[in-house]
Image (cartoon, one colour):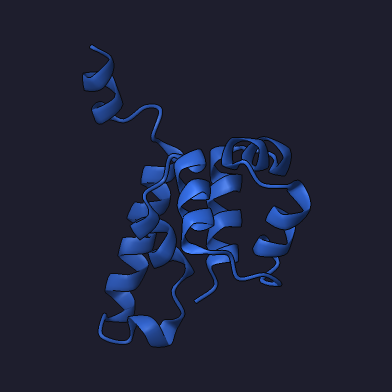
Length: 104
């Protein structure tokens, strides 16, 4: 699993700088950088804090960070489709109908 790669992808899709994400997740920028580079294995609570700061469910971040071997029970076609859906959901969270209903 490469959770750092998934965190970086989500951060970039959300248009957040490392500074902003680190501040929201209450970690240092240098620690976030090391996580994204795969040089540190953060605790579950740190990963959860980052996911909350990203406003992306932990399950989606974990899926995006999964290695091919971890997804071997899924066809490559299904894995690609799920990845595409997850990325679109991350990109469009501010425009999603769920947000519109919650704000109504």
